[in-house]
Image (cartoon, rainbow, N blue to C red; front, top):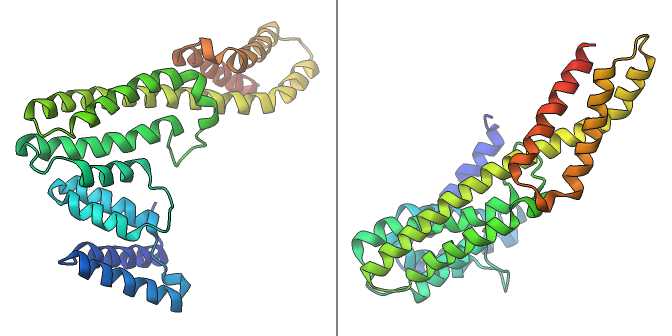
Length: 269
């Protein structure tokens, strides 16, 4: 969707402010730039720096330019407001900038650190079923993907921990673990999308079931097939809620398919 003129102006203002902060030649100059921004915000609250968006831009930049991880850590500390917790991916970047090896293996560093930052962000988005186009149903997902997510997350943690070593062999093992975790999160996102779609169909069908019932009762000739499908859908809706922890995400597919078919059939009728 195209941005409005006002949205484009805000994006340009934010990008300009970020570039000035990021490109400051020293920590002292960055501090002065930040202090000036805060002073402007005191005069006009509309100009207050959006810390969350700045954090995202810092992480995006260091993912592209991992050699600037120390700069990223300094800028993250600079923009923090009081004791406000960092997002997990920002916390990892800050931790690495502070505790990472002073001389990491160059070849492995260039590809592995960006992947570690991306996978850390992916770890947080997966259980939330992050999808701005649809309601996420994140509160419904844990019984379906929670246990598997923990297993994948342990693999991610193992990969991250290996990056605190200066050994090339450790970094290579860390890269393998991070790639495994990334693939695992992607699979879970596919499962989450399936479960999310099924709950969306379930909610739509349950809202319409009373009308389906009225329609079926008012028909001059009863439709045994539709009656059976109504009963099946009602049963499957209960199954979805009551036994989610014992079902695999793929088990949600039949409900979505049957509900869609029933909705189309009744709609045509």
